[in-house]
Image 1 (cartoon, rainbow, N blue to C red):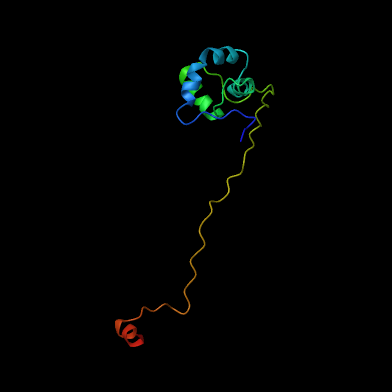
Image 2 (spheres, rainbow, N blue to C red):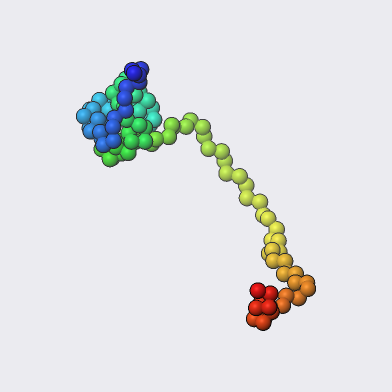
Length: 116
């Protein structure tokens, strides 16, 4: 049974795969602003077969100046909303416990023995 996708690295082999292709990864990382794009490009080129989360973990260990994992945004943050004064409401209190009707009576030992 063949697959069009290359087989993922087995457990423990991901770090070895990353380290063996470290120079190529560093070269591609200089072309992209975040790790998601770096990993996608390397995956498309067939350089790496490791999962994205593993790639990020190993990349941050090897390269201490790692870029952010989230794509960069060109949207400017909105101005902060004006603070409105909220009137001080009375603190909430608990409702009183209703009385038990008819009044609860604890059974005596004699009554319990009589029923059993």
